[in-house]
Length: 328
Image (cartoon, rainbow, N blue to C red):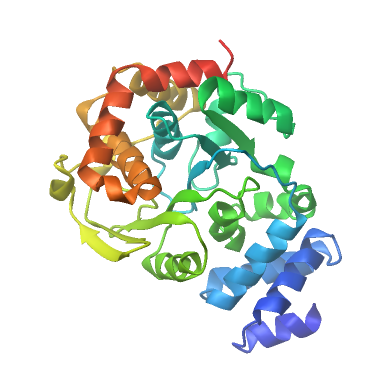
């Protein structure tokens, strides 16, 4: 590790294969905590290269506990790390997408830059995390959605989890989260916290057979925020849209606030699912769920996808999917 750190500090970068091997060694506990912390800190100080990102991804997937589903599943997952503390937009959007007919294998974890990540909110409502493949498949059959709590599928990460928690800021593991879903989804909506990372993701996803949309709001959100325009990369190219292009209102940051406690976050979550959310809360969930549906079926067009998302949320179907996941 000393040699690797020396090279990185001297502004060199890792090859794809070297990045893969370092990730495996890091996850396997071959480096001491100080070395691991120093390695993660490097990527807070400088950007990550496409080869490094691809190598880290390959190492994580090599070590994961895989779960394969018969149907083409989708994931909606942001990198986190945008420090915006929004309510659980992508998690709510996942239930809307499932309710609209697209099976979802949601990959998630506890929040890093926000109070309430997807794992936090589901745990708040009593959901029991599992990596039992049969139970996950029953969830898909029952609710058209299952939830995959990342630590249960990446057991090798237990060696770096305490370090990440102590650091308390985003690391390159946040950049990897959406790319290492153990269900290997063929359809995906990914939100990222920087435009540079969005471009890198777009390049890597173009090398796969996935149907995808990678997006970044121009004012820094790792999802469609409707507080600004957003750039997205997809199978056919890239585009820049404004909230008005979606026929949705332009919002302010306060409209997306996630609350100051887990109780407040949970209350917002249920209020939106129950169809009692504000116009602004509904709009941002519909925007992200609609973009996800578009990612999975791009021939359907974005406006049609947005209409399907709106119907799935406001009809109560998304609430029903949530209750079925909890087996209520």
